[in-house]
Image (cartoon, rainbow, N blue to C red; front, side, top):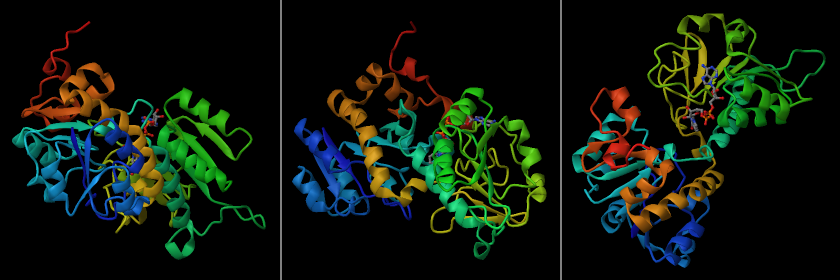
Length: 368
Ligand SMILES: NC(=O)c1ccc[n+]([C@@H]2O[C@H](COP(=O)([O-])OP(=O)(O)OC[C@H]3O[C@@H](n4cnc5c(N)ncnc54)[C@H](O)[C@@H]3O)[C@@H](O)[C@H]2O)c1
C-alpha cells in the first residue's frame, strides 16, 4: 500500500501521524511511505530521519495526497485539503465527524473511505493524559494575579489559603489533570458520577491533598473554587449542562474554567473551542480556557504516543484493505465513518439527523 503522511496544517499543531520508527516498520512490511517535508520537525523527527527509515520525502501536502492511497493524519481534514481528496483514498485520522458536518459532506461527496481513529483506541486515546496534564498546568498559570486570577499560591504559606481546584470527570483526561495538580500538592477535589472512577482516584492519591465526591456537590463548591477543570465525556446529544451560564455569577472573581472536554455548550454551557493562538476568553467575568488540541503543545511526546497507538491499525488496513480490516477488527470498525458515499457512523448520523447504514450491516457482518 502507498501510505502518505502530510504535515498538519491546523494552526499551532506540531504533531505528526507516524515517526521514523513506524515508517521503518511499514517499509519493512513492504509498503511505500510518502512524507511531506518538515512534517515531523516539531515532533523531533527530521526529513533525514524519515529518509533513513525508508520514506520518500515530498515537497507539499498535495503531492502526498496524490502519491498515496492511505492518508495517515492527526487532526481533521481541513477545507484547504479537500481539493486533494480522491474516491480511492482511505483517510485515517481524528475526524470528529459529529462536530464537522462539512468534512463529512466532503468525504461522502468524494466517496472515499474514512476511519475516525479517535474511536479505535482500545486502551483510551494515548494523548488524553497529556491533555489533562497540560490543561491543569495552564489552569495553575491562570490563577496567578498578573494573569487575572485569584492570586492564590500553589503551596500554603503564612497561613494564607492556597489554590482550591476541582477536577470534574476522573477518566483518562481527569487522571492526567490530577497528576499535574497533585505534583504541585494543590488542594483538589475530584468529582465523577462513577463510583468506581472515584474509588480508583482515591486509591491512586491516598495520603495526598485529594478527596473525591459525587458530581451533585459541584454546584455547592463553585463559590470557593479557584479552578474548575472539566474532563467529562459529555454525550453529544445532551442539551443540559453541569455548569450553566447563571452559575458563573456564583464563582469567585478571578476564578477560571479549564474545559479540556471543550464541547460547544456541553457540560459547561458557556464553552466553545479555542486554539493555542487565542486560548482564553471571558464569559460573565469568568475566564474560559477551551483549547481543542491541547496535546499539540507537546508534539514530541504526543506524536510518539499517537504513532505507537495507531500503527497496528495502519498496518492492518494497509495489509488487508480498509473494509476487510474493519470486518476483522471491532475496534477499527467503530471508527468506520463512511465508504462509497455511505455514512456508517451512528453518532454522526444521530447528531446531524441524517441517514446512515449501520456499520455491521454495511460490512455484511451477521448479528451473532
Ligand atoms: N482538548 C483536548 O485537546 C482534548 C484532548 C483529549 C481528550 N479531550 C476530551 O476530553 C474528554 C474526556 O476524555 P476521557 O478520555 O478522559 O474520557 P473518559 O471516558 O476516560 O472519562 C470521562 C469521565 O467522565 C465521567 N462522567 C461522565 N459523565 C459525567 C457527569 N455527568 N458528571 C461527572 N462525571 C461524568 C465518567 O464517569 C468518566 O470517568 C473527551 O470529551 C475528550 O474528547 C480533549
